[in-house]
Amino acid sequence: MKFKSLLLGSAAVLIAAGGAQAADLPVKAKAVEYVKICSLYGAGFYYMPGTDTCIKFGGYLRADNWYQGGDYGFRQGANQGSNNRLTNYWGTRARMDFTVDTRTATEYGVVRTYADMIFTWDTTAVTGSNPSAFSTGSASLGLYHAFIQFAGFTFGRTVSIFDAPWQSYPAGGPDTLPGGSNHVTGVNQVTYTADFGQGITASVSAQDETTAANGESNLWNLSGATAANMVQGIYGNNNWGGTRAPDIVGQVRVDQAWGLAQLSVVGHNLHPAYYGATELTGHPGDKWGWAIQGALSIKNIPTGAGDSINLQAVYTDGASRYNFQSLFPQSFFMYSGSGAGAYQSLGIAGIADGVFTGTSAANGSSIETVKTWGFRGGYTHNWNPNWASAIYGGYGAVQYGSGGKAAICANMVGLLGLTGNCNPDFNFGVIGVNTVWTPVKGLAFTADLSYSRLDQKYSGTIASPGVAAAAKPAAVYEMKDQDSLALLLRAQRNF
Image (tube, rainbow, N blue to C red):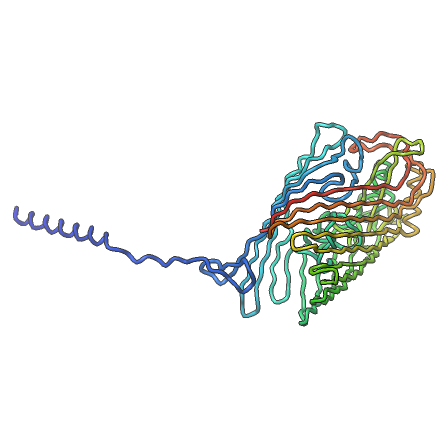
């Protein structure tokens, strides 16, 4: 028994030792997957490990300093347009933009996804007449692009095919340049583009204008006007109903070495809610507005390599956002001094797709569309690879119909006691210059100076009830054209 136990113990020791030696033997490691460059779609793309999908990360970091007008527009509304101690004469913005671009080759062509996200922190603004009350919305997130492209289709959010390629920046300039559409922050859509070769394309799109920055323009029931709102350029109750149809957009473009030519058209549905608070009050019938825009870019002109001229013009009828674009305020006020014995001078402007009146079907009117026209352009000159300068301008006009003018003017006289000429039409113009220094690739420093002017058609005086958000008292104000001068200093690093 002792011999048997000794034999079994020895065998166990040998087996354990053999197992330990086996554990020390080298095991074949899994192959390391290195990130490979993808040259199919240009610089910056890499294959995602283990897939045939290429990905590229990019974006920019921007630091702005602005003087007058906000970042970056003209002085208007509360509290830039207040022109008093609540107004920010100087402000800043810090922004990071991050883009993700993926592409996969398939038997149906390239499948692409693209997203563009921004993270921003702005100067705060004083609200009301309390110097300690600041807005809390200074930090913000945004999604400019988020789309899938496949077989000529685009599904998701991106710029509109109605827009010119330069959006509302024909040679730089403020965000509030009139004279054409601008969906630089994106609009939700479904779009199909046919490519005929030689740089010739045609596109058709169904887009949701309510998802653009600041949404649609106004659709006012003028019977809801109040004195407090009218002195801010708000002529009635905004009376949109729910969406019933997308904006239908078409575009034809020729993009070649000499430059670009583009023609765009859009149909825009005006679907109002009710005359009053309930269904029993009835409603006006729907109406379709429309807009048409032409754009022209001329490249490599004789003044220098890389120089360019960008031009566009637009006409709208019931689709005002396609002229006074998504970053342009749709109602605003501007104050300054007065030499007419009034407390101060005031300029107001209101933009709408259409207007109507009435509190019920018995006394209600149909929609009367608002017409606008405008143009913008810019010229860029490259002094050398590191320095470039530009001049740009834009001009837009708003024209109400006879019924809208009569109703607005009745309110201006009845609610505000207007003593002079009454006409809600107005023109708005911008002109500016800028210089960009690019000391190294991807890093640019910009100085941009712009002048804006509101040419209103009112004259005389009004008895304003005051505007609490702008610390304006009830007083007599002179109706007068207004000016704005703004400067932007920017540092931007693209990556």
